[in-house]
Length: 238
Image (cartoon, rainbow, N blue to C red):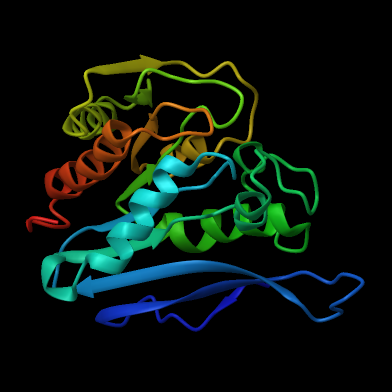
């Protein structure tokens, strides 16, 4: 039921919203508006970049918003889809979970097209955006509850070619520390759904807490740009 005025097949730079139906006491026909930017230019890979999977993790949200404002069509090879605040209600509330339905978006996949707001977002990614993407970048940090040494990381997937592609992309972030892990934290994760569809998936933990020092901002921005260059989606200085 999610709609968008953005044409996923059109060349050029478009900015708009994913409109998620949300009926509440003050808006019977209201929508949650999730900002999205799409830049397409010529041929090349499709890369989906996501921030704000958890609303209180702002490092990725800031880096993606800055990139969405600054990047031009000519700086892209292929198609770049930027969603800075995927769990937008949680970002507005500065919470890990959605204040609308109490759900953890990173445990909501593959989602439900007719479910709650969080379930609908997960379903849209699973069925509309992941299938057209070659690579998925999901930027995390520790949020308000913890702080990580800034690092890129990845799941250990079974397919050797996919694993090598993910390893190379993870290292392209160029953080001082990286790690590979086997997930034991439940089901329904966004990266796992994308991996199950065969995508090159890169994730991060870029610090945490409610303050973001300048060096972490640089790691978030420079690392994201490095990975986009590595994937062949942009060769420009951004």
